[in-house]
Image 1 (cartoon, rainbow, N blue to C red):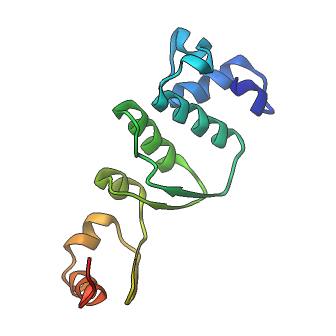
Image 2 (image 1 turned 120 degrees about the vertical axis):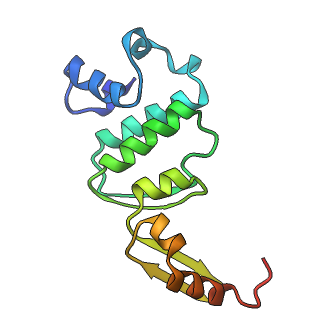
Length: 138
């Protein structure tokens, strides 16, 4: 299935992409109709990687994924050489992938060049976040 989206037709090249998405051995020959939801997502990520995009927008990319798929997605996002804008409730994904945090509220926004844990712990950022939501019903 994946071969049709690749300019490179070499079997090892295609298997390499599938391997990065945690498919190994005979799993690479599975029909798409028998794949789990997480496996289908991993196939779509492989397809996206073959297209060599330079920009991705992802909304809650780990929703409905199994642990293997989340791991594969996290690794793929870390290796991606372009820009990614994403929303997530997944702390590990935010910490390992994001290097710029943009938080938007009805009262404004914060744009901070730091990793997620630093953003959460930083006292100045905490004060700015509190001001962003002051009087806003959540």
